[in-house]
Image (cartoon, rainbow over all chains, first blue to last red):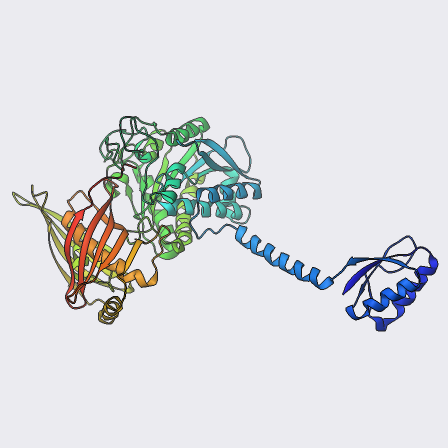
Length: 395
Length: 206
């Protein structure tokens, strides 16, 4: 089938074409009907008629040009293009049920920030190897509203945490406006989410050693690399439960906040000045803990934190039956000094909790990707319980 | 973890991965001049049989001052675990009929995947890790099998299957991931024996 564009010079020629149009047996499909000499006439001609129509036009001296030489080819190509585009649409939608590289994660952060007006990507610093530390800020307005801090991936091998953080970010963003609880939460408070707290370590787990935990900073005087970023906070720094051996996976570092990844968060939180909850994700063991880790005594707010912890664990269990043990770090896991939630608690952030996500050792750090979304879903219920409490109990 | 590791070593196989479902009760007794004895009531289950649990009582004795000897473990299991006779025979025959010796690495892989046909190899390593955990634990360690780094089958002239593993053990308290070489013999009726093991020498500083 061809499509011709006919340029009529006068009324006479227009009349000829109108005659042609009336001959229904020709099955001519006029895309632009003949009306006035100045206007072009576009007509689709079935393949078998092409020769005879052209002969007709030529014999009457009517000018024409070929707009589309082979209509079927054009249609075929368009169909192909559409299929490819649909494919691209589907795959450019982020797969939250899979593990991703740092670049893919950062792209998704950009995507979330561009899709939702109340989501902004901010940079709070950079890692030892100069990778940006990106935080998603969820804010529906106000000036310096009370804020909630949530981080993941401080220990790079704990892959389910970065993956869950992405799912949670998307969940909060997409449910604002429809979920009553999230809506009222973000209408009163801001949320700051750092999905990859240790990007250097994370890249290292993709490229060299899946079991890498620490940062990648060079330690003066040692061949060993990296500091355990969750022993590097200024809370009982250097005490029991951290190693002073640079080659150890729980090396506390040369001094508190020596790791830029830690210092950047400390500075951000201090400068903000109005953070009311500090929540951090780890794996594995299925635990929900509050301070202290550096000492084995109970915090002043023990009763409230224990009760809130139990409520959160109960919420987690309600979804898939996954049980989380609740307690202080020292009682539940081990004595560990220089930890982040001990620092935040001792700096006035009452609601400080650390989660250890799935599982309990069968897969450990190598949790199958098929468990990412269930883990994220149940963890979110626990986080939500805590956030609702923070929202309703301002201090 | 020591108790579970020991039970896993004694009762596990390529068709049975024993895990701790719940700790019902635990009590510690300090015995003068001897050591610390733990009395435990556990609920165990087979990872391949979600609906069934068995009760287990165990006693673990850590000898005072004998840092290099394994704790003594005694246990009894109440109830029956799913039979693995058929699966064991099938696994045994499959491996025996392989033309080339089986070689594999990174089980599970970085994304937590284990190919279906390698699942028994993984469970066998889990059983062997039960032995390693029992032999190398103190009251201040908590080991898990993190990953099989490498496994190589070694064909034998007798009826046993032999697999030489390099496994990664994750120790929770120090957070170290420790490579360990362990050679494992297995037979459907004779069960698993560890023929040799050693902590892999050398160190990856990063």
